[in-house]
Each structure stands twice: as structure tokens, then as C-alpha cells.
Image 1: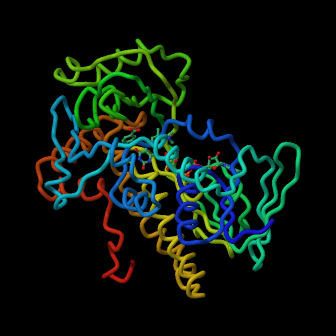
Image 2: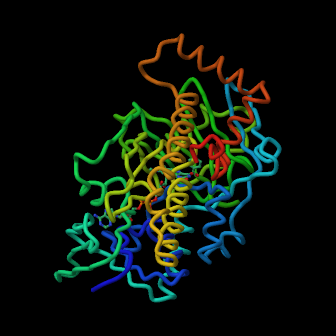
Length: 399
Ligand code: RFL
Ligand code: PHB
């Protein structure tokens, strides 16, 4: 079998890249370890930046998102029992974010791919990538007891944090940066109306909490929990009770509880791989970097990697130019580090760290107090949250 681009992983990165390439007439094959239902069952991101929305439109899969997604012009920070609104729209000259679940976005991409009959191999085991230091990279895998081999021009490693692509890069050529946080997020999804029309990020003495949503009838809540907690030990009732304790009076009053549809604990991590290119293999999305979810940046970063990679591949096939491919890693990493910094900063601003003494708590409160009462501080939060412009820093020669 032969194709132009072999894509490893059918998460949002791989599926989006596949749609964009197909729209430009570039042949691609996706190889995914799980089955489609399993990919759709992972409850993850909920907030899309404009750059992600534009890219889904460019890929021709934005119709349902525009119909069903909720445009948010701001969110609340609840600090010391007091609510402060971050007016994203007002502080950024009209920018907004959209609430549209990763599950829905993935489903739209999967449906579009199936409708166009684009080749996808689900339930692939023993996936191996090789020869990406030559002009003929190779992917091998097994499916239903049968061995498969694919020759291609390029490999796109869109296989997430635990994938095979990054692990196959030569050890001497790769540098990894990592910070693991001493807590996780316990998430609960329920078919109950959200407690508030916008998101509420909560810094409480009992730890961080987040009131998010998927629609006007489906809520998503998170609680900061110690890494020692097990999801089996959290009944729905215990979750709601702890959430109530972290909210303010009005939110407590409006909170509608109900049975959970899903509950899980996600560890928090900052992680970056440098570079994001190894010969003819390119990493994109969670395969190359992880952010703690506090800034809602993971999926959006994946989308911008895909944008840069797609533009580079299109340029290569249309004009024979490798300039975009050569610039990919540096260009993507410049944006990655900015989002990593924001996610780390917002995480340490909003959570309780078990080893921090009372003085660090005071520093945190003083910083929040400053940010929330300063136009510059509010703007810093807002412009990072909606996503820095794609050409940010370009004028300083770093774009
Ligand atoms: P994914 O989604 O992990 O998909 C990778 C795919 O590759 C497959 N795979 C393999 N396939 C073939 N061979 C192998 N050897 C393979 N190994 C793995 C996997 O089965 C999978 O299907 O990576 P991708 O596509 O880069 O997408 C990244 C996003 O999923 C991720 O960044 C976001 O979910 C992060 N995230 C959020 N991002 C946002 O932008 N906004 C948010 O509000 C937001 N909230 C979140 C989040 C992530 C969370 N968790 C659980 C980590 C909230 C949470 C709780
Ligand atoms: C979510 O709805 O899952 C979500 C929203 C905002 C975040 C993280 C997760 O910062």
C-alpha cells in the first residue's frame, strides 16, 4: 500500500489533518489503535478558540458546531468567595470562545471522513513507524490477525501522549521537558442544566473547582483531588457535596445535581518535546506536548499544530517547497511554549499545592487581587485565554 501522508492516530489532530489534506487533494491514510466508539467515549475538552473554529470551517466540518456550539463572551473567577467576571469580549476587542465538546467535534470529523470513504484502519495493533530518515518512510501494523505495510512520503504522528511516534524518535535527537503536578482533576458529566450561563473557575480553600458545560442541558464539573484518590471511591453524592462546599451562595443555590454519565480522574502535567520533526516524521498535538487543562489549551494547540503542518504539506505538494516543513517545528514550538506558560501559570494561580505553606497562599491571593483589579491584569488573562494571535511575536523576529 502507498499513500502521500500516513497519519498515526484518529483523535482530533489526526482526523482534522486528514480532512484538510483530503480537501487539498493530498492522499492520506489514518491508522488508529482503538475502535471509533472508544475514541468517542473519551470525555475531554470543551472550549474552542477562534483559530480552532476557523480550521474546522476550512476542513468543511463546522456546520453542526455553529448550530449547536455556545458562544461565550466571558467567564467567572471565584476567589475568596467573591465572583469576578473576565469579560473576554470587552478585553480583547471582540474575541470569544465556543463551548463545543471534543466528542462532538471528533464525531463530525469521523462522519465527514466516512462520507468521503477516506481510508482509515481502526483497531490497529503493533503499530511501527520506520525509515523516516529516508524519502520512503514506512508504517507497519496488524489488524484482525493480518499484517499491513504502508509506504508514504511523510508520517504525521498524531497519536497522543502514549503514542508510538515520539517513542520511535532517535533518543539522541530529542529533548523532553516535564512537570507533573501533585494533584488531579476529578471530572463529572451530568444531564443537568449548567449552574451558570458561563464557566466558573474556582479558587477555594478546599482546592480548585471548575463549573463547565457541554450544552444548556449538559454540565461538566471538575474538582481538584489528591493523586491518591480513586474514582471508584467517589459516589455522585460525595462529588456534589464537595463541589457545593467550593462554590459561593448563588452558585450553591442554582446547582442542579443528578446522576453522572461519566466520572474520571485526569492527572495534570506540563510536557514538551523538542523538536517536533524527525526527518520525514512530524509530531502534532498531544504526541508532542501536554498542558494542564486549566487554560483549556490542549485541543486548541493541537489544532494550530495541524494548521502549520497542513500549510507546510500543501506548499510542498503544490510548489515543491520544503520551507514550511523546515519551519514547522520552530513555528509550532513558539506557540506551544506560550500556551504551556499560560496553562502552568493559571494552574499555579488557581490550585492548592500540598507542599506550599501559608505564605505561598498569601502570595497567590495577592497576585489574584492584583490581577482582578488591574486592567492590564485582566487583559493578560483574557488575551491568553482566547488564544494569542497566530503571528504573535513575529514582529520581534520570533514568529
Ligand atoms: P488524542 O486525543 O490523545 O488522540 C490520539 C489518538 O492516537 C491513538 N493512538 C494510536 N494510534 C495508533 N497507534 C498507536 N500506537 C497509538 N497510540 C495512540 C489514540 O487511541 C488516540 O485516538 O490526541 P490529539 O488528537 O493530539 O488531541 C489532543 C486533545 O485530545 C487534548 O489536547 C485535549 O483533550 C486536552 N484538553 C482540553 N483541550 C482544550 O483545548 N480545551 C479544553 O477545554 C480541554 N479540556 C483536556 C480537557 C484534556 C483533559 N484530559 C482528560 C487530559 C479536559 C481534560 C479533563
Ligand atoms: C471542559 O469543559 O471540559 C473544560 C473547560 C475548560 C477548561 C478545562 C476543561 O479549562
